[in-house]
Image (cartoon, rainbow, N blue to C red; front, side):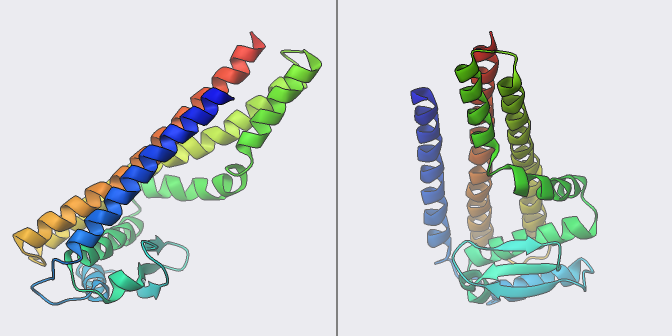
Length: 233
């Protein structure tokens, strides 16, 4: 178990460093005010309009970095800072979340795949580690490598595998949304060169948080798989 704690600690440390860097970047580029004077909400609405999307609403949501697109009720949810602010960070986030709305409207295959996994992952992700651990403990208690404990542990690994798959499917979804956002910002001359550079840098760091999460999920899955199958041997 010590190896597992070290692994989780290392992943948590990297995640914390990336998250702090992300917050630092957004704070930095929040000081780069937009020449066009548009708020995040106005930028989001214009991007939706430019893509012919009329059935998606742009609304404000409480908190910091709580921005997201909800495909169920078709809303672009922007945190209070992004919704009202008129800077490079707000432009980047608003356009990124609208990128997801465009993906949804165009039936982007990776977003469709992720949406299908949501109901499964929402049920299994929270209990997968405990199922694997319980199976391993049962294997140790009974001394039977191929008994019921093994199959319980494998079931837990499958549950964990869905969460890992979800994390990796999220990567192209997030990177593509950022790409769509940046292309639109540039093509429509929504930002100056300096503002564009800030938006691009901020979105790169946002994407790295998803990359760290995906690698962490894979590392955890591989660790527990080694414990299960190593214990069986």
